[in-house]
Image 1 (cartoon, protein in one colour):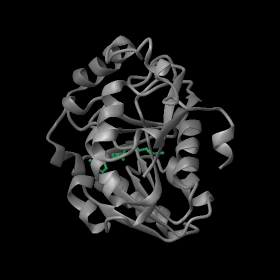
Image 2 (cartoon, helix red, strand yellow; image 1 turned 180 degrees about the vertical axis):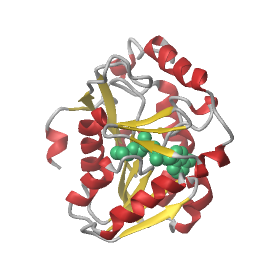
Image 3 (cartoon, protein in one colour; image 1 turned 30 degrees about the vertical axis):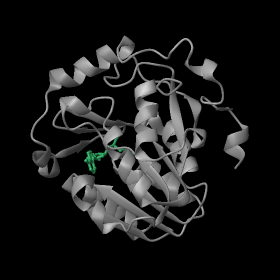
Image 4 (cartoon, protein in one colour; image 1 turned 120 degrees about the horizontal axis):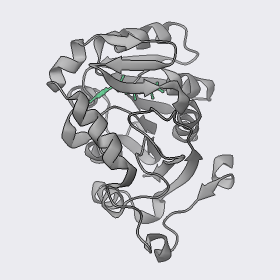
Amino acid sequence: MDFIKTNTKNHLSKDEDFDPPPPPWGDIRDVTHKTRVDIGFKDEQAWKQAPAIFDEHTLKIFGHPVMEDWETPYMKELAKIATSKGGIILELGYGMGISASFIQNADIQKHIIVEANHEVAEKAREFAKSAKYPVEVLEGLWEEVIDQVPDESVDGILFDTYPLSELEIHKNHFGFFRTAFKKLKSGGIFTYYSDEINTYHPVHLQKLIDAGFKKENINGEVIPMNPPPDCQYWKADTMLAPIVIK
Ligand SMILES: C[S@@+](CC[C@H](N)C(=O)[O-])C[C@H]1O[C@@H](n2cnc3c(N)ncnc32)[C@H](O)[C@@H]1O
């Protein structure tokens, strides 16, 4: 896997990686937490039927900055990690379809897309019509539809949803870790929009371990990020791309 050789930092190889500890929840995340609290959250079920407002560079739902295309290099990296073992790829959150396109550029067998918003799911179904590899779209909150994906059946997972409640801001991935472990084949690979600047916060790391992943199989790559100054959800110039193997 050539991405392991380039720009890869094993965050967990030495205890010193935690000393001094990474920044606590806080720092710039205070700002990006507040922006979303200020926009406000509706009932999760309402998200499904909400209008999806696309322009050339962004996707907004209920006024939330759900996806912006400056993230393309990060999405490319996540797709590269998720598809590095080929086979069946499970993607959660279609958004603007940026990572989905990168997944289809890889050598895979099948691409399963889970998407909660109806209008975005329609886009995913359109995408499926001309996709190189077969795409199955499961519409609904992942929490509702994930049982349709058999346990231990997928080779790679890319998780990139969006917080649907204040509690989930910067940690909507935490609730998925146990499911990721269950759905992956042994040796399968898991990556996701990490909300981490350059290393795993100890709480984050512990959640992965509690879900069943072994510490020595939890690594990552630090990816340069270049958010516009007015971005409401990310302010740092890097983000960790997790490389987590079952
Ligand atoms: C950040 S976007 C995904 C961006 C995508 N990776 C791309 O490259 O364009 C998040 C997507 O996840 C969907 N979503 C949010 N919560 C979800 C959930 N619980 N289950 C499934 N999809 C969800 C949103 O509707 C949105 O389309």
